[in-house]
Structure formats: structure tokens, C-alpha cells
Image (cartoon, rainbow, N blue to C red; front, side, top):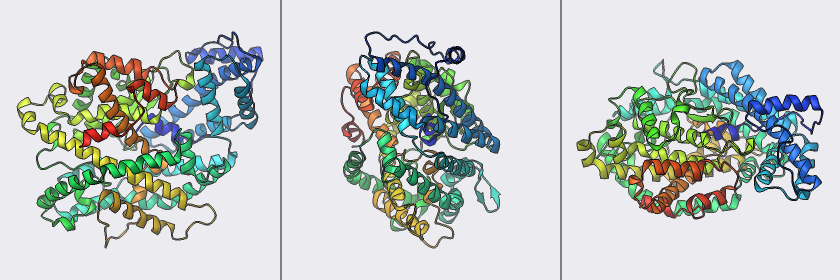
Length: 594
């Protein structure tokens, strides 16, 4: 997961700002601005612009310094909370989020900003874009403080449960990493079921809390004129809700026969491995608790290329690869938290602490193909964040869109199972890789198809969650009905069988932390896969080489100049056209999975 988790999870609260013109205040702000690498007040060129544009420039100038302070207050508290699990750090994070939202909820500033943007003339494109993004930040936060507080405090409470809870199996406490390794090695179906259920235990602790949070989020969305939080979120992510659903319906139709054929082959292998008839295979036979990743195929287990390593070697491989590209992952790694420890978040993310070069990854690395992929993925987010043009206004020093940073991260993550990359960077013996190269490529296609179908479940289910979590008249049996809906969708889109005769099962869906930590986010992952496929094709076409044989330094320079440096100076559709030569399309992804 990414720094974008912070961006979309921090839904935000703020202290009124107004435009202060007192000289002493300006001198203080200039010191703050200098500390964030921002120009002093009044240094922005203001030629050939009208009076409204001048006032807008001044508002924007002050805003950049304010935003830098608010941003770092959140990021440093967030980092401390995720690396320690301390309640005090979670409270600091909540307080910083509240301050951010309170600032942006200032109605007077928002109304004046809208008026000035309508009347301003003569602004350069970057200043106009920064003003547009400033207005969007205020628009998202025009909420009563008590409602913002409810959202932040409920979210923080649930996040802390996710971070500090450890599954218990047969009276012994484990980490998620422990259980994932155990289920991958276990061949007894009943024991696999027990491990799988342990991985879902947290859902029982949080499912009702998530529904309460969904109702509060819906109330906030209605306050801003939307039907529900899902609709509001995708709109503020610059999607048309109907168009987003259309894209996913097209993906579903496109991948349905390909997925069905692939899963039939996979099921035949698993049936043989576990000595279970195909029609009795259950969700715990697929290794991943959500079937969002592929189990090893009969022909190749990508873990074979990593399990002999120490966990530190996984990070070293990533460092070596990014040096080869000329991209500064070293700067990310030196401040990152890469390995497990007590109380730490068990997942992974990348975070840009100050938009001035302090970028960090949080991982829990083990010597597996999955963790090699995650390290490369988060490193991709990290070098993207480091690559933004430092001369951009502070609020434009972010990726063009969640889709584009996820696409870059997935571009790199996919290398963990690539035959050429395994030999060149992971130190694999070519004599061992060559006989399984085709199997590795087929495994990659399995991964893409499985993740695509899983992402459809997440999109459809989360949309339904907010539609059903009506604040005043919600279904009294909503917890049970959501469980049924979850397994209906898993059956339809992932072709999984519904578990029966279990003990505690109502929290299956709620054990996925994204519903809290990165709400209405998951669609960006698969759209990122579409962008990654399109980017691979564009670079191969323009650099006149197959993607696997691109000149590494040329590839790194292209990424830096065309993808990283622009930040969010363009809207994301224009950015995709500029960086790949074409609008975003499923065409290139479809080619890769056929």
C-alpha cells in the first residue's frame, strides 16, 4: 500500500486560515517556508494578472506553507503509530488529522477561493492547477467538526485493533506472516482451515465497528451533496462513478472466460496436491486468505528462488536493482522500517514525510517471492515520490493520481517472478530458471487474472456496503447480510465455494484492513495494473526494445522525466496520455493475460 493510504484515509479536519498580511506573521511564515523549500511570500511572479488573480496567488502562497506544516504533523505521527503501536501515537495521528480537516473546513476561505478562481485571469498553468487542487481540498472538508471528529476517532480506534491484534491458533499467538507461511506448507485440509480462520479473526472484532464507521462516512457524504461515501470518494478521486463501473464491467466480461479456464487448471493441480475432489475445494486451499494471489503452480514455486536467503538479502536485491536504473531507492531505504517487530503494523506502505526528500517504506520482509514483490512495489512508490520536481508548489508534489503511483509500483513488483530479472538481480542460477521460464510467465498471468477478479469483488462489495449502510434506516441484520453478500460475490467473480459448518464467520469481509485504512481505494490497484501494462508497452515501443531488454539507465531516465517529475501538474487522464501516448485502456492488460 502507498502513501496514498494516508491521503485518502486522512479525511481530514482544519484550523481556519484566512489571509494574514501582518509583517511579523509573514516573517514567521517565511522561516517556515524556507524550512520546506518554498519561496518567500511575494516571490511568485504576478505580471499581467488581474486583482482577483493577485489575491488568489497570495492565498495560495500562504496555503502552501500552512499545508506543509499540517502534512508533516500527520505523517510523523502516522509513522510513529505504525512502527510502535503506541496509543499515544495513534491519538497524535487523530489530532493531526482533525487539525488538517478543521483548517480545510473554513467556509469563508472556501467561498472566497471559489469566487477568486472564477474571476482570476492571467494565471500561469501551474499556479492555476495548484489553486484548483487547493479548492478541491477545501471542498472535501466542508463538514461540521463533530462529524469529522467521529470519522477520525472511529477510524483510529479500528486501525489500532488491526495493528495490535495477533491471531491465536490452538492457544498460541502468531503474526500474519507466520500463518501465511504455515498455510502455504500445510497439506492437511482441516489444519489449513484452522489457519485460514485464524487469519480472519480480526474481522470478528471490527465488523460491527466498520458498519458504524460506514454510516458516519455516509452522513458526511450526504452533507456534501452525495448519495453515499462510495459515490463521494470516487468523485473526489476524479472518476465518474458510472464510468468507473463501466470499466470494471468491461474488465469482468473480458477476463471471465480467461479466469474460468485458468482456475480450472489451478483447481486440478490443487485437487491432486491435497487429495480433495475438485468440487470440494474450499477457500483455504488457495493459500491467500482472500484468494487475491496465486498459489504455487505444479510446475514452479517462485519461493524456491528466495527461501534460502536471509530477509536482509531481499532488501539488498532491491537496492542493487534500483541503483542499476539510476533511481534513488537507497535514500528511501535508509529511513525505512523493513522488518517485523512487536506492535508494528503487519502490512506495508510507502509515505512521503515532507515532500522534500524524506520518503520511507514500512515492510515486514521475509525471504519469499511475495515479500520480494512487496519490497519492489513499495520502492516504486518511494522513488516516484522522490522524483517530483522540487520547484512545483507543495500541493502539486504528489503523484498525478493514485492509479499512476500504483501502476509504477506494480510495474516494479511484477519483476519478482520475471525469469530475466531473477537471474540478473536475484542471483538465480540460469540453469534452474531456464527450464521453468515459461511456467513463471504463466504464473504471472495467473497472478494478474486472480488479482483482477479479486479487485472486482472489492469494488462491488464496498459500493454495496455504503449503499446498504443507510444511517437512519439500515438493515438490523446487516452484519449477517453483508456476510452473505461477500460470499455471493466471491462465488460469482472468484468462483469460490461458500464455507459452511464454521464457527465464527460473520467477519470474513471485515478482516480486510482496506475498508478502514484505505476506504474506496482498491479499484485503483487494478487500474494501476492497466497503467503499468500500458507503460510497459509505451516504453518498449519508444525505446525500440522488448520491455525485458530496455536499457536500464534510459528506462530510469524516462520514468524520472515523464512519470515522476510532473507530480500532479496535469489531471490524471491528460497525464496518462502524455506518459504513454494514449488514454488509459484495458487493451494492453488484455494482451498480457491472453
